Length: 208
Image (cartoon, rainbow, N blue to C red):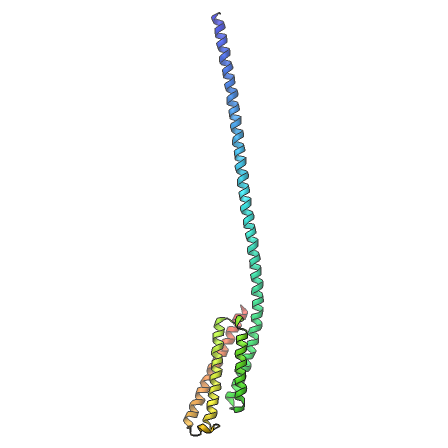
C-alpha cells in the first residue's frame, strides 16, 4: 500500500472519530439541557404546589378567624344589649330606693321603716339577679350603697328608740338623739355621693 493511501485512511479515521465526538458532545449537551429543564420544571411545580398549599391554608385560617370575630361581635352585641337593659332597670330601682330613703330621712315615720327594709331586700335581689351582667367595680359600689341604706335603716330604728317610741329607751339623753341624727345625716351624704358616682359609672359603661 502506498504512503498516500495510509495517509488517506488515517485522515478518514480521524475525521470519522472526530465527527462521532461532535455528535456525542452534541447529544450530551442536548440531554443535559433537557434534564436540567425537566428538573427545573419539576422544582417549580413542586414550589408552586407548596405555595398554593400554604395560600389555601392561610385562606382557610383567615376565614375561620373572620367567622370567629363575627361570632364574637354578635355575642358582644347581645351582651351589650342585655347589659344596657339591666343597667337601666337597676338604675330605676336604685332611684326609687333612694327616694324611699330620702322620705325616711326627711320625716321619721316608724310605719315606713318595714317598707323601706323590704325595698332594700328587693334592691339586693335585683342586683344579684343581674350579677352576670354587672361589671365588678359596679357590683362593689352597689354593695356599698346597700350597706349605706341599711345603715340609715338602723339609724332610724335607733332614733325611734331614742325619741321614746320604745319604752325601753325613755331615759336616753338628748345628746344621744343629736348624735344619732348626725350619724344618719352622714349616712345620707354618703349614699347621695355614692349613687351619683354609680350613675356616672353606669353612663360611661353604657356609652362603651
